[in-house]
Length: 351
Image (cartoon, rainbow, N blue to C red):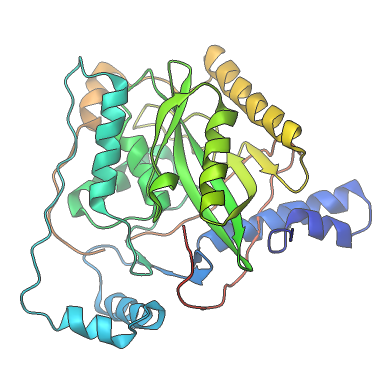
């Protein structure tokens, strides 16, 4: 089975067996890979709207040109939509509101329903620029804007939105889970928000594939959850190559901390099945210990909880991007980062 495009193992093999050189190569590869996540959508390049909302004319025209290039119907689909005078009005989803007595699993279902109602963004232009290095408070401000604009979103935006909509669920642990898969000569990336409630794991998110989005919190261990995603990928003919796990995210919407996106980086080409399972459970223990020591996500104060309520939205246009993550790999203990420009090879099985 081929290694991920320019993966850390291949880079290390090309360098002298010096631990320092291998570590530097791994860091560089991981850096490039992280940047590549910001430029690709399933092996196909996509753009990021960096001009805010409403979308400016150059960004708008660039989006339609890109749609014409990547859609099977080419320019005809853009002309058909842009030339229509009677397009139906798109309903704006209501941000979920909960009674104090509403059980957490029901709240998670409602949050996922809302994320799904926003719909997946197929335009090839990401509307909200998300920089992973921003402090949590800035990302929460961006999530508020997402609820106001009610535009289609991609998977990273769904993770930020999921954090925002679950901030007042203080008994719920949230942490990012990133996947890298291989299919038909290309590498694909996806991210969801892992959740843990009452010792059971699940996930929130958005994807083109139903089985790669929501997972109810019913999995007894983190490894069971990840293996379920792996099986879902297998049904889509994708091979799971790498998993990145972050630490728990603070419940304080005013926190100036950064989200730890990649505390553990697990390369399946370097780990046996049993070692992979052990590393997943080690990460789960790390998260429990961090929370147990009081260094985990703090709960919001009572007067801050109202800040997590749902803002209203108005119709407007689009904004987004990805940025750079952080931290420590587990399984091998080195952070890394890696990038490549994809070729525009049309529609594939993208997840």
